[in-house]
Amino acid sequence: MFDVIIIGAGFAGSVLAERFATQKDKKVLILERRQHIGGNCFDERDENGILIHKYGPHLFHTDYEDVWKYLSQFTNWDVYHHHVQAMIDGQIVPLPFNLNTLQKLFPPRLADKLEAALLNRYDYNTKVPILKLKQSTDKDLRYLADYVYEKIFLHYTEKQWGLSPENIEGAVTARVPVFVGRDDRYFNDRFQAVPSKGYTALFKKMLNHKNIKLMLNTNFNDIMKIDGDKILFFDQPFEGKIIYTGQLDELFDEKFGALPYRSLDMKFETVNIENYQSASTVNYPNNYDFTRITEFKKIHHTNSKSTTILKEYPQNYVRGKNTPYYPIFTEDNQKRYEQYATEVNKIQNLIAVGRLAEYRYYDMDDIVKRALDVFGEIQ
Ligand code: UDP
Image (cartoon, rainbow, N blue to C red):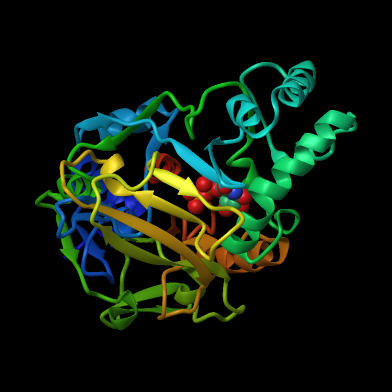
């Protein structure tokens, strides 16, 4: 009855469903465990009429023109450039740490000296990962690096990951570099926007096709089983393509042990004032148990007397209890992941795609790009 079965209705699963349905005229079945589509991009209006991102702030940004054009078939966009601020020693300053941040945090003469040291060593408008800046031999740069490391990265990363910056993959802290320039935006990609009617509406449009059948509240484990190098669907071998976008350890009954993830407890609050904070997101690296506060009406502009904020409290991931948001990228975990990936390759019609299934810290545009590439490679 179906040519393709897709497990998971986030970006990886939905893009592939749309492509198979529209480009190859295949009949696609999507199995989604949650009661909604969109994966962690899912958004909905709350009781204040404010569009909230149920699984934390999702800000679309990309340099891939093909990804931008592809998604633009399913949504109009509101141009939106994300701004993040950080509370450092009682002051609100722009993040990523840049020359404006530097001028705000240091007395003028010291700020000028540190700025000169940075500009002497690096080109204007370049990004420097904090762990690289920390290796500076220049005395002033070393002083600055130690300060930024301590005030912005160390305690935030310990909260967020339960690990220090040295003990996670360098690419993680490099996502928020020291920026040798005055651009206060969180991202500098060419395309930055949020879907005008939200992400859920985008996914709805993407999946609205006669060839796509969606089953929500459906656990793939209940109807599919791995049997040697075959996958059984209702106890019959399924010969079509199977796209799996969930956790690989779960697919293989944790036979090589669990793949660790980091989770967050998302606590939404309604505050009875029109505006809560000066930027969409304010990070709190050094105090409190939460890492950051996001105010959603600043992302999707809404007129309302009250406002909705989200505090993110990092915690360990426990299967069945909370959401696996981030793969914890250490060498040991990567090795374990590779063991599972080898098992995937043994099943000829199985393809694992997406942030969970590839155990990668993908952004939304990376996943769309990856799904489009995977589709291009499929015979
Ligand atoms: N980070 C930090 N301090 C900050 C912001 C980020 O130490 O104020 C580090 C932290 O390790 C975090 C990583 O940079 O996990 C990536 O941050 P990003 O904002 O990209 O995380 P996401 O939005 O994906 O949770």
